[in-house]
Every structure is written in structure tokens, then in C-alpha cells.
Image (tube, rainbow, N blue to C red; front, side):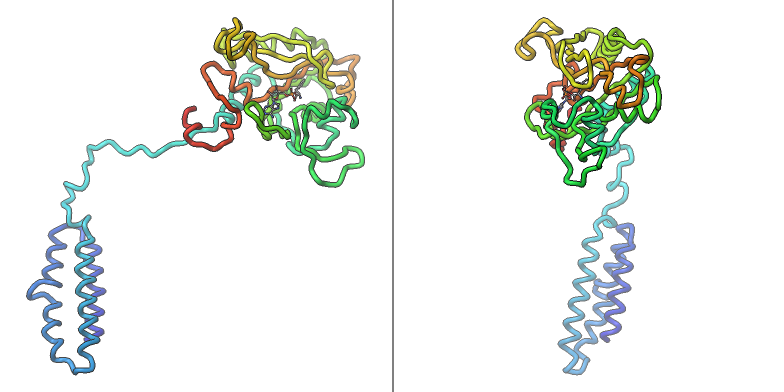
Length: 340
Ligand code: FA5
């Protein structure tokens, strides 16, 4: 009896689960639970069992009866007529789609603007020797200008010639590496990579990106630098935005400049946000002869210009974008990122 009941349960549940329409389900209900159904036949036989088996088999009978009743009730899909269940004319549910991070988009846009005028996109190590990050760039070990870069040093053995290992604080480490890669000019590099500094506030993040341009050839002068900056500014920000060069100092360029772009709100007139009408884009200048020498390029024959700007800061200056705190870009807050 026990075995028969268990077989009955398995058979019933298999049939109920695979039932696909309400009629079939009704038929199964009558077959198993109906007045003259299979389970009632078993119920009639229960009193005839020997006393020692009665209670145990009775309990199993009840369990199986409720398991079959539950299965019939929960197969609700099958109990609703198909025509009511699915309306094929309803519009589909659009799955949520992500998009590229705004910084990745900015990097793609910056690369394509420079690639159109013959710059080659490269990427150099983000963990590099002191030689490439500082010393080859005319910044001797003891030079106080190094403090400006607030560098993270890696706790690793020093190289006898290349020095310590650093998390690159700027993309200028690509300058001498590119000179070494090509061996000789012409050079037209755009190096975009992550940079790291011990800084964190509304306009600084400890990890950020820079894009570094380097052009070296015969007869390169400041007008080429100014023309390249104008080209970038009008393509990235729009024709109404202007750029200017302001004198500055970097060890690896001479002369050196800070590049400004007109404010997206007042377009150079001066407003509460920018005060004087200009926003700072980043550094630039004519490559210092010592840097060319580090890259084994003859400074008597060749000259060059370089610039290095922050991707996030440059992106924030686009018209119409109001990003109050640079750190929001890396907060992974989906409500913030969804706006772009
Ligand atoms: C430099 O890093 C120079 N290597 C730039 C350069 C290259 C000058 C080639 C001349 C020739 P500076 O420290 O000013 O310069 O940084 C350049 C830009 O990086 C800044 O204007 C800013 O846009 C961005 N930047 C710097 N630190 C941070 C930071 N912590 N968070 C976000 N952006 C930053």
C-alpha cells in the first residue's frame, strides 16, 4: 500500500506539472481527488489494513492528498486560459541598458580629435621608473618642483640607473619613452593614461586621467602649439570658445604656459563662477633641450612642443555640464552617471 501510494504521488505530480491548459488540470483533479477518484479508492482500503500499519499509512495518505491538492492550486499558469495570460500586441519591456562612463567617452572623443590631425594614440606605463616620470624631464632628484606632483612611491627595490618606482603623477613619463620608441623625429604622440597624486578635494581626485601631446620635428615653434590648442578647443568645446596661453613654469618646457579656455557660462566676459572669464585647462610649452637629450634627440636640429591636461577637468568645462565635485565621477552612483 505504502509503495502504491508513493508511486501514485509521483505520477500525479508529474502530470500536474506538465499540464498546460485548464481542462487538463480539471480532469486530473477529478481523477485524483474526485468522489470516485483514485485517492478515495485508497481511502476505502485504509480501514482494512492491520492495526500496526493503519496510523503510519493514514498519515502518508493525508500528506500525499495535500501535496496533490497544493500542486493543482499552484499550477496557476495552466489554470488561466492562454488567451487571457498573454497579449501579444502589448509593447515589450525594454531591458535597462548601460552606457560608457563619461570619462571613457571623453577619452574616445579626445583621441579622435587628435588622431584627425595625425597624432598617434599611445599608452605608457602607469607604474613607472622615477627616470621617466621625473629625472629624464629635467627634474633632478633634489629639485623642489617634484613636490608639486605629490607622488605615490612604490615600496620596491630601486633600479641602479632608473631609480625608484612611482605611480605616474602625470603622463609626461610618455615623452622620453616615445622618443625611445621612435628613435628619431617626426613625433606626434597623444598619450592618455591614469595618473595618481596624493590629493582629494572638489577639483582633485587621487586617480585621474591626463592626455599628453608631444610633437617633435624640424622647425616646430609656438605657433604650431597655439594652432593645435585652438583646433582642439573649437572641436571639443565648440566654435564659440576661445583659448589663451599664460606664462608659467615647468622644468621640462621652456618657455612654459598655462592654457586657459573661455568660461562656458559667460564666454569670457566674467561671471560669478569663473570671475575673470577664463578657466584653466592645463600646462604646455616648448620641449626643454635637456628632455630632447634624454631621448637622444639633437636639440640643435629638432624642436618640439608638449601639453598635458586632465581629462576630467577638461570634460567638466564642456558647455552645459555642471559637475560640482570631480569626485562624483568616481563615486559609482548610478543616479549621477545616468544623467550623462
Ligand atoms: C602637469 O602634470 C604637467 N605634466 C603638464 C605638462 C605637460 C606641462 C607637458 C607642460 C608640458 P599639472 O600638475 O598642472 O601639470 O597637471 C596638469 C593638469 O592635470 C591640471 O591642469 C589638471 O587638469 C589635471 N590634474 C592635476 N592634478 C589633478 C587631480 N588630482 N585630479 C584631477 N585632475 C588633476
